[in-house]
Length: 527
Image (tube, rainbow, N blue to C red):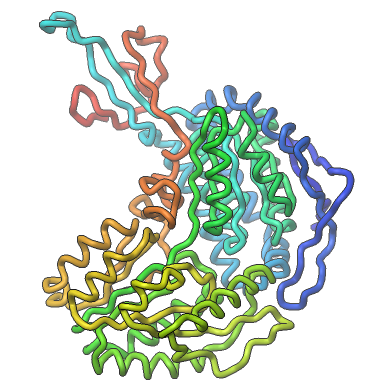
């Protein structure tokens, strides 16, 4: 399937004259054809003005039509077949099985939002009927619901070229909410982005929608991304990436004359607490599970368990011994691109150079630098060092983890209190451990968005109950999620109608409830 290497702006193939860039095969270091246009401010303006113009018509689309549009996108991604997987493999170094699973996740979450929109209750309709005779003042008729926020800027993520990219969760939830989107494709997988963008543009055309409902702008320049956020048509931003990148977008968005929300997921060390009973009962099993979690996809998950907290006792010593063997048996593998490999190496070097931090395990096979490989590595330190050295709370994106040994229960709880915001925390323990360490759950509830018991945080389930977010610096907005059906509310805002005649109200708020949705009516839930 030939690639044109240009932007897709409001249904048109647009090439920016001048600089081009190429994707690189991370395992060979060779450039991939074709060259891709480097976006500029003129592209940004064209895309966002088209999105602004398209917003009213797209917001007015019926639930059934919007759901059908989303289903068409999902079906189109499947119809790309092997061409999509093969290009993604070349651009990311990820194996076919991993990408096939990610494609399924991408398709399923688009269809999940289609079902959500078709049913319609996500708008949180609320009705309070008038009471004209109420004393001392009459009560007016008041009705409230969520409506689209307007054009949304989405940034593709490097580590999920499908599920957090052009048709990923941010895009699917923004489109489901009724908003046009402009996607800044990730420079590491522009071909993959173009293929998926073609599907969305085709679905826009099939549905008879304005072209401005969707645009893709390619490019490596940070200025293009900042220009997208600065543009007056942008009403919200979805981002998954580094703390530095997310914070830059957040600062620009909040310095605008009209500030807008930036829903940025920016990294996490995802602490794992192993309580004494669990460590005593299954130290070897935990070591094997940790090795699998740390090395999965070369540790390139935002939920990678980068910190293990346990008591300094003989059972933890047995865990370290077993982990040394299992980490040693792990195989180095190719990382997504040279920039991620460079950042991982710098993070590992910083940990290795820190006082009172020792390396206790790594892969026996040395990584091949020519193939952009990284090897799993495990460090160890004590609780005092963890508290004193902020480097130990920085995410090292890749197959690395740090074990923190604590002197006592109170010391372990204090380490938990010192944690910054994270996406997840995990607790391994027995029932008696949970009873004795009940305070730990209360502490970590204030630090994370998801708590895992006797498992590992990788392998996030996409479902309505999922929470993928957390307090800063994991995310810029803690009371939101980028995964699951609740992600749709990021790209909507509430509006209330007071005293309106029934025929002038949106269908969701009309007395007869023509869409048959669940509503809060005079304080009671009704369908």
